[in-house]
Amino acid sequence: MMVTTDRELDAVVIGAGFSGLYMNYRLRDVLGLDVVVFEGGSDVGGTWYWNRYPGARCDSESYMYCFSFDPELMQEWEWSGKYPEQPEILRYLNHVADRYDLRRNTQFETRVTAAHFDETTDRWRVETDRGDRVSCRYLITGIGCLSTGQIPDFPGRDSFTGEAYHTGSWPHEGVDFTGKRVAVIGTGSSGIQSIPVIARQAEQLVVFQRTAQYTIPARHATVNKAVLDKVKLDYEAIYDKARWSVGGFPYDVVDRSALSVDEQERDAIFEQTWQEGGFRFVFGSFSDLRTSRQASETAAEFIRNKIRQTVKDPAVAEKLVPTTHPFGSKRTLIDTEYFETYNRDNVTLVDIRSAPITEITPTGIRTADGHYEVDIIVYATGFDAMTGSFNRIDIRGRGGEALRDTWSAGPLTYLGLTVAGFPTLFMSTGPGSPSVLSNMPVAIEQHVEYVSRIIEHLRAEGLATIEADAEAQAAWVAHVNELAQPTMFMHADSWYLGANIPGKPRVFMPYCGGVGTYRKRCDEVAANGWEGFTLRPVTAAVPA
Ligand code: NAP
Image (cartoon, rainbow, N blue to C red):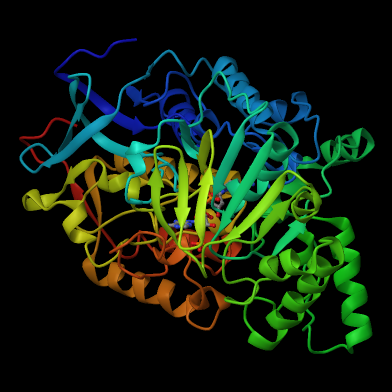
């Protein structure tokens, strides 16, 4: 599909991942609007289209990592793994695109370069790198929170003559590591998932670690069909429980401090949830691991002991033991045989906190301690998270104000969904919403349905724009910040705080009050006549 210039649309959606697909369905098929979706990839999938690195898998259990808006869709899809792997999630999203014919109005391999609000018409003027120029009344971004890859600017980076890849834009044909000497830089989620898989294939693997991590075994397995069949009998209730939870999972809430039990009992509870695997260690053990330093330290010590028991070489184990940040301050990591990988003869761990990388050379990586010759470098170095993908687009609101400037000291939003001065621009899972601190499809569905509800209201009432009030926005930003202050999140150099990007303002970006509390607040805003927003009618000069 090719969009011609000068089309006057109802809505433009940017991105065809989870957010964009559902937004398209909702606006086009439920509200009957004229919608175009622009997508940079050559097909649907978003995050799961780009992140094809070995071992890429979601940390949410598969039966909860999907849409819930159509009971038939929920019933018909069969997951094969306890945790869904990237190819299977991509198959699922392709199935969704086919089932609802969502490619029909999606233009692929097209990036939106600019979106300017035209105050004379109350419409957005949107431009793409393919020369498209369209206008729309509603502009919705579904550009993901972790879509702008970050490769550190190491001296000599471009002089490397071997192959180099970033985990977030992995070649579709895959990479053959057989017989190769491989470097992985970075030990976040992408690093710890790919390292064990690459280690099994490569001749030599050298891991460059700046920060040792707390990671919990996933206990991945094929899906237990009996469990899945049982879930399907009660899917709506299970999903609803997730919608009103903290993390977007249907797990039973524990209301128990790690400090309320003695050491023996505490260890038994940690051990049980460690054996269950995945996020249950966090959500199913104690309620204060992220809010009490002392409680967090009990989990940290439990994991440190696990590392020492697993890794045979005590010197390597000590390098892998996290000491620089509390448990729960960075994204909780879920792995499959991560620590065990360091028992392999072909794997070397290099601590680049004590001896940093000084340069990339034509043949490898030099640190303060020596030179490592490699054939392939894998950058598992993360993303310019939450705001990076917005900054790539020249978004301008009232008075030509650039969003980049509005956000120069950190993102300002109302409900993580809208920005004062940028009318009828909606950001699915924007900064200031639960997004990355939750099971994403739950957060995405809530945002898509909320945006759709707003647009429905505007149309029913003959209104042109909805815009966040500056005071409501300031109060929301303060609230998001205030919620984060007492948590462990404030005690690490994480991407949640923008700390991974040199020069980025240090502001805690996601809303950490939980998806349920957030949903309740959004519903209250609607019930109170769209409190905190100004809604303006269509003027005579502006066609509806
Ligand atoms: P990340 O968590 O930001 O990790 C980046 C890694 O690169 C860290 O180990 C970091 O070290 C290192 N690094 C960054 N800049 C560096 C530099 N200049 N020198 C040396 N090391 C450097 O990125 P990610 O692993 O791609 O994950 C990002 C997020 O994506 C995750 O937190 C998660 O939300 C999501 N994700 C989820 C899954 C899943 O569901 N399983 C999988 C992949 C990604 P420091 O720690 O010292 O900064």
